[in-house]
Image (tube, rainbow, N blue to C red; front, side, top):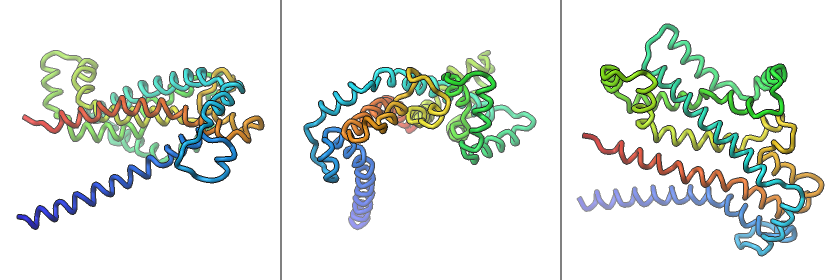
Length: 280
């Protein structure tokens, strides 16, 4: 028994050490980004440093005094990211629920189509998408950035697999016997059950929408509608080409909402796992 406990402790030690190593690899790039946001050009050109500098306020004044509308960028990005997350996750969950519960003709073909769409590169149909948006006269509009995210293929796949593992069909039958409609069943019974999966997909969707640069860059032309990544990209122009500290500071500011959203949603993942670990 003693040798078994020793072997278990050794195994646990290596697992913890490996997880700490991965955590350090994930934290170091962010830490270096924050450090460079506090340094001046000369310090940055000297190379990597783990010690913060004292140039933060100068970088901030440089950032805000050159028409970098950070509040406007935050507002635009936040609106697009939150709206995209709500629309994508909700309707993807509804699609996954329909594919999992209902038995209809062509169901397997529809599921195969969703898997096929997942394998296609997003850039493959972008030219056709741009032409379609132009014909609808929706250029320089947020609608093409939000509506196409409904029922994302990857999110539907994840949520359907999650439903297959946690949802009992007897629960649906009981709700129908009690007179609950399909929408009420989904919103009041299914939605709370899949909260951990919804939280995980919300994080991925929010981060993807917040960091999305290419699609808004092509579709949006008005500066007042620019998202934060588009404004950060403007820092690479001629005026800012030597102000690397301001560039790093602008990038650092842009990741703050992502971290806040992650910490907010991660508690739902943890609470859902805790509830799922207790069975009667």
